[in-house]
Image (cartoon, rainbow, N blue to C red; front, side, top):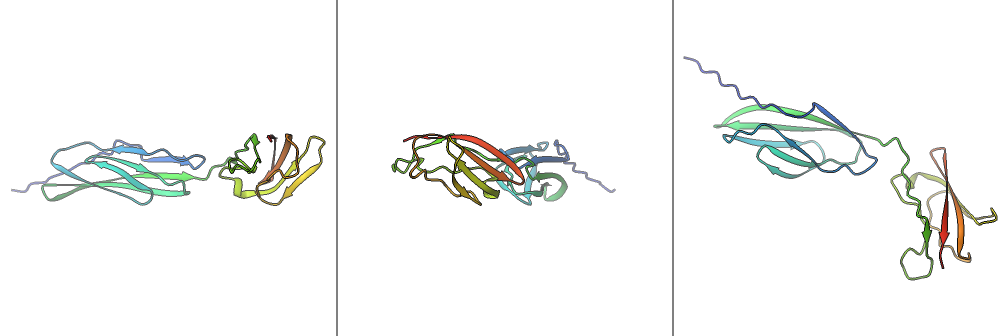
Length: 176
């Protein structure tokens, strides 16, 4: 007499997920069907497993562009079961991400004393210029160097930035 034992492990997930790295990806939770007689083993090719409870795993995916694989396999009564796979793709953000503070206070208190653009694309700034209210260029650099506002009166200024052949113009307020 022959016995055939089949252990099926259906993954109740889409076969693939795609994210972009415009923002930090929140932790994702994945779950397979539960069977009290099975032991579950999870493995990922990137990211970090933040929690595992039997048939459920929570993963913090990286924001690095690439394709990552999530796999889970089981054992039951000492025998190996099926393995299920799930693919996660992280794509590069197609948008330029810059954060332009609207004001700063160069008063020497160590808080908000210089003006600097932030964001994922801030390191890609090719040109930055700051103009006073008469349109005179008072600060100019070929990167994202902070501006300390020395010898400038309180008031509204204009910052002009070039990133990847795109120009961004914003108003900023120097508060004394």
